[in-house]
Length: 274
Image (cartoon, rainbow, N blue to C red; front, side, top):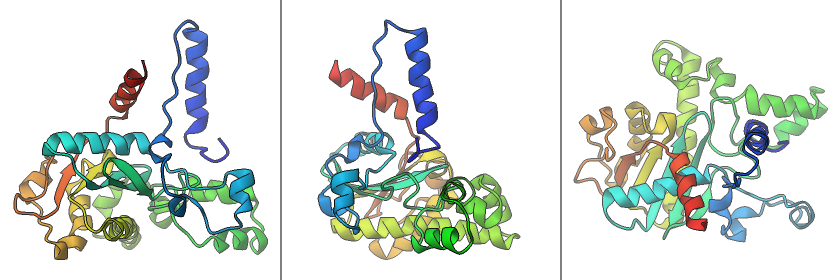
């Protein structure tokens, strides 16, 4: 809970209530980090003294793994083939981007906690770590104050005062800070897609999901416009109506918009074990 304050407390509460109300029913934990258990050391080790990994297990864990694994399965089904190189973008209140090669996650934007990576509604995403020490040492904030700020008062909420992207989309043409927050968010996602495109030597498909990724054609278009030089083409009508495949038939990279279904993914994983 200390590392994932927005998620773990309520998840543990669900376990406690289930054990109390359904004492004879077996409880199974499906972990959001499980999809990333086979990352290479070069992807999960941080460039800090190695002893902190050995003794304290400070490493990249990755999150949203259940959602990203579901997107891999669903993308294969929709395209009716095994997609060997795929980038999945789960864009919602929390946002993450994952590179998947031959069905295995090889890299992901979230790290030791869900705070790392793309800019999110109230989380800062990537920042210079020296900002934390500056806030504590020079501005005399406590570690708890800084943690709360980075998790609950930052992201596009911190930039423009709004954390609902639907409001920002309406305001960005007239409000300078709303426009700034939007552009920062788009670029933070583009950064990770670009990184993984190079790392995998190209991709066959990019799949968007989450409240924004699956429902906002404008966000998908603004992100994918950066990759036109790769032969990407959007089908504007399909994108506007949030079709499952939103790229044009002649596009070299297939782009999909798939609603998240983590509940189904968890049920399938549990069924596989019993």
